[in-house]
Amino acid sequence: MTASDSCPAWCQLPEGHLRLEPGGPGDQHIAEIAEIDIPEIPGLRSAVNGPLRVRVEQYVTASTVHPAVISADFGDHAPTRGGFEYLTAQEAQALAWMLIRAATTIDAASCLRAQAGKTH
Image 1 (cartoon, one colour):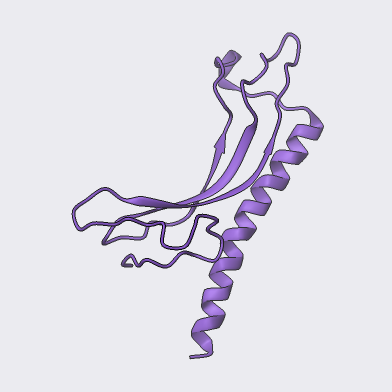
Image 2: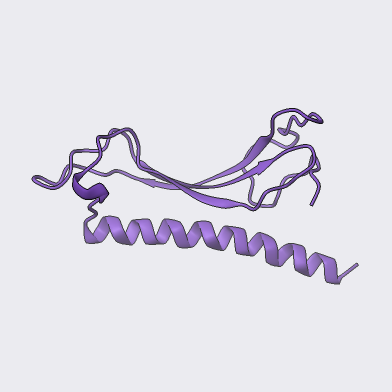
C-alpha cells in the first residue's frame, strides 16, 4: 500500500496535513475519539494527571500506509501495584464505549472504501 496526500474519512486533522518526503520521517492521521477523567481510588490508585484519552492513529511514510491502531493514553502517573489500572464500573463502561467507538470508526472507513470500490 503506498501513501497519498488524502486522509481517511475518520482523520480529524486539516486536509493536506501530511508532509511526506522520500526516505524521510513519516507522519500521522489522527482522530480524537473521547476522554474521561480518572480520579483517585483510595488504597488502589493515585489520581491520574490528566484524562484517559482514546484515539485512532495511522502512521504513514512516503512508501507505506500502516494499519490504523487504537491508542489509550492513561496520562502521566506512577505505575500501580502489579501493573494494573483500576477502573470503577462507570470508568470501565466509558472505556469500553471509547474503544468500541474507535474500532467502529476504523471499520466504518473500511466499509466505505469497499463500497466505493464496488461502484467503480
